[in-house]
Image 1: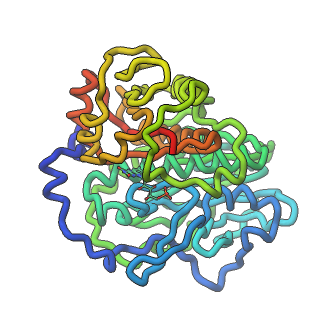
Image 2: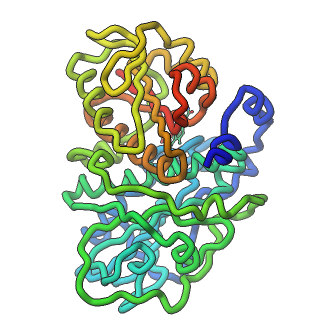
Image 3: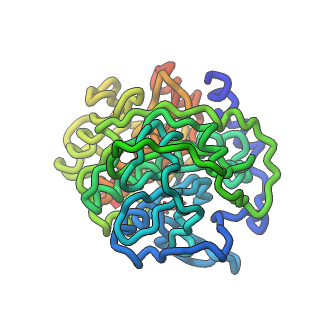
Length: 407
Ligand SMILES: Cc1cc2nc3c(=O)[nH]c(=O)nc-3n(C[C@H](O)[C@H](O)[C@H](O)COP(=O)(O)O)c2cc1C
């Protein structure tokens, strides 16, 4: 993992080398589309499908250089969305049991294959048929590699974490219990879902319960559909087939989330520079206390209503100081962040796909809960890793950063 951390570090030299002109006309397709002959349910056709819609949907459609510009209910590094979402439905009244693609662009679920005795259960660590919904999040690396090169490997797992966190939020909004399924068979799923070199399964979640009838492996893999219109990717596929280790920790689960919070979510682009109320600051501090292992949360308070500004770890001030400008410089000169109230830095001593995934899930929770309180949040993936480590005086790997504040 040390090798992957080092290869995907951002340094001032790498940033300078990578800041070449980007031809947005050459951006690879952002959405996978299954053939038109397949059966589809529109998102609003069946009430039980609401949770799928709230997990992944388009919430903004604009235009840039005469091209459509989509934004989804979940954030993504560079808005590139190198993720896809699949859903196995079994035994839900009024819905054909089968494996579906969640097609956010067209607002529907596409039935890829019906199921009976066989299904995805054996690939996600379940022996018996699962009555309800099994979600599988995949990543499509080239959508992000196209812009970010090697750094994209990290963004793919962070983005997949946001997608998993979005399923958790959707389950909360629809009043359903959801479990993060640890121990998926990544290679088995990769084959069963008909993926090729451009797409890899990352994490699975379940809403429902295991019955007592055995579930078999799929007799045939699903049809293969390329998730891209083109690719120039020549990657080391093994880096995407590492099964991420993730626990079903309580700290990943958002409190009761409203549908409106999901549909209105945006990344903050401007903070007001005002200190939070005392209640707001307490809320941020206690939310960050819930960060699950193997993640740790550092906080750089830049506008705290009562406590001294400075660096905090686990709620304890370890260094007082005014660090706003210095922190912004380490976040690759993103100076709008100086007006946020706090910068959260997630670190770990167990760097790998599981920790990145966990960081994405946790920050999605922060987006949701802070958003519900009217606070602004932005996930930050662009930072100089080694400089941040040095600043904090830690050997722990930097996983992800988020800015929180009044907007
Ligand atoms: C992994 C990740 C890294 C991100 N890094 C940055 C960043 O460094 N700076 C920034 O301003 N926004 C960052 N964002 C926010 C995205 O730019 C934002 O999600 C995207 O433009 C879509 O906008 P929306 O979140 O309002 O839908 C990041 C988001 C994610 C998920």
